Image 1 (cartoon, rainbow, N blue to C red):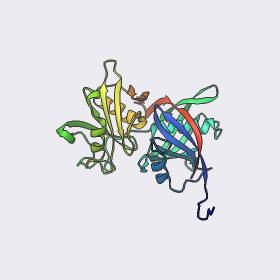
Image 2: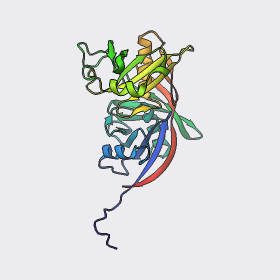
Image 3: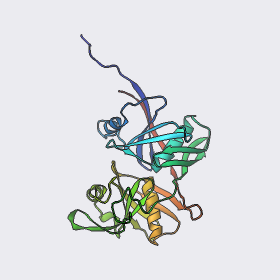
Image 4: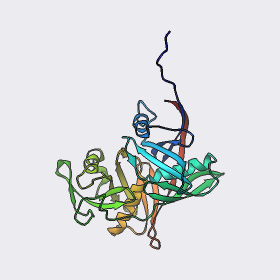
Length: 287
């Protein structure tokens, strides 16, 4: 049988990891070169014909920090930052012996972040990440006279929501509601993500304050849709709740995938996020 013209295969090793169900495909980019990561993420993130994930994260050495993280959403767009992903990167590099540090610096498009690992029996099980200083205004990320968003947003069906803009390096619109279960996130989320106020699009968080003081959050992530958790979204939610007087400087944010503990430190103004990181499985792809 003639086999002329069949392209050569290239093998890539990957690790599937998640932080509270926010799952990505992780690849050591120093070992495996992915020529078109946007197309790779778009193809292999699909649930039925790919690996199934919220996107792709490439890990490599950095000239500015210990490691560098590049994030590609399930739609192929490149993200600036991922809180759940950064905890998993910390676990990846430590558990695979790429570093023996328990405090790791990580270069992202939103700046250099610091990850402090939590270990059990020598393996990383979670981390606290210094997410930096939040911004409540952004001339680049919001189209409004003063660069802030505090008005009413009209969405499909004529329903109005009051949004608070918070940037954690990436744009978020936090919306507080009385009954989060009544929100149709799959309908409202994409309409707000692409709202004309957001030239870079936005992550959308719907939040309800619970009787015990915790914050119940559901999220529509820019470029990925509904996800089970969003680390930067949890940080933005905690900041917005503090600004509105609904919470203090420390909050527990409950998402579909579990809880994150968020502290907006009054001393340095940084937001600190604490939560788990888990490995689902590892595999190889011929591409």
